[in-house]
Picture 1 (cartoon, rainbow, N blue to C red):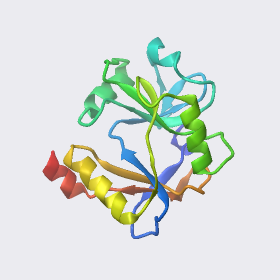
Picture 2: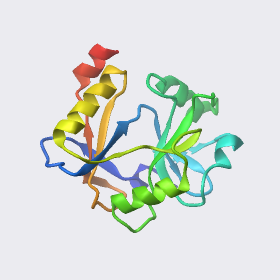
Picture 3: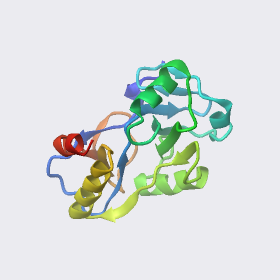
Picture 4: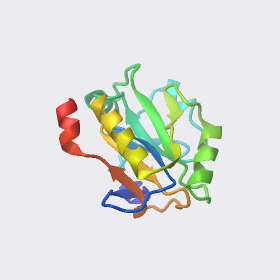
Length: 179
């Protein structure tokens, strides 16, 4: 059975040096893993994705998020739990777990597999950021109703466990005030 133990998980940002890392929006949806044949959740539940998504997915494994945009968590949950996919539902991949390279190489490969937009896409990353730029991006995302930022070490390798090479940068009170 495939479960979250097959996925890479990060830690909360706690003052680590992140100069030169990549930043992406932390999506507020349901974590999903495409194994090349089927999609499944952290708990190991197979997700019945629509054929319109299925035919866009490659044979390579992808780690990502099923989401419905900012404020669309309930829509994403309904899609995952009951197969009720709406036009807002997207699978945004943020990693290629079976690729042997470090993150910056995996990300470039991911970009060659998927388009930047549409029902199946790659999640955009900003490469080579400073901490100030990451915080500014986080605040901008939170003011617009988003959750925060994920930071990836460009030299980090995919490992199915918790790693300090992937960090979550959020400030919950700001997010609540912006909502």
